[in-house]
Image (tube, rainbow, N blue to C red; front, side, top):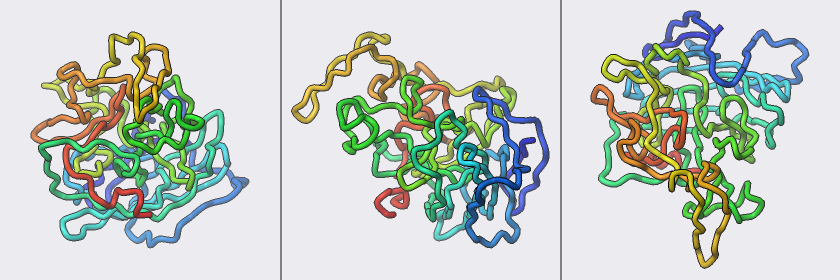
Length: 337
């Protein structure tokens, strides 16, 4: 049974609710058997901690200070038959919310047909989120050198793949942000060994999402989605559903496939011609272009609802966000670790 959680007070109440269903069949059970191979656990003070295991959040509070608390959870690596304990602490410091996390999710993971290339390992990561983000005149593009967001279960969002057509083996080594034909890990045409939560691990074992986490918000089409995390620029990330003048529906991306899904055009970059061929079918993030007013969301995959700007989880590219409307905090720079 999923738990419904409103994380506004220091110790939130948990109530049972209907099971959260989605397009991927993923059964959760945390009465794990005693023959599990091992149990990874980070020692933290759990005094007054809120258990968010498999929780469905409900709060739409836009200020990160509303989520100050200690959170714990338990999860199982399905393919490795290993138990983990998640820990997330949110505190306030000089007008910022400090997220200290071990990057273990609040749900089971690694449940695909193939196990992750790298085993999940606990991390020691700290992010800072502004309590009062502001929009810039120009957007900031996503970068391989910056994490994109932190979710309220302690797991980060890292949308860009390190693989591009014509670079190395296509899976790693594509370190130039401007390199054309970067693979989209969310495309069904690609295989990045993600689990049923659209996540996998980095070489150091960091678990991270590439799209809809299929957790933390209800799939009920009659329920307006809560805040499930914060982007690096401080703006909230909501689930998929919003209230459109009395009608609750999913937010729609304004990105479309180029050339009406026609033939891909070759691209010359750094003195070399790149010619993957085929059609604009979504295999690469370059296959998409922003078409204003074709959906609900702006070029960064966000919009203003009830006076509050935020990014939305979508069923199509760019999945959660494409760029930042505000200034990403330097704590999200990967080089810090």
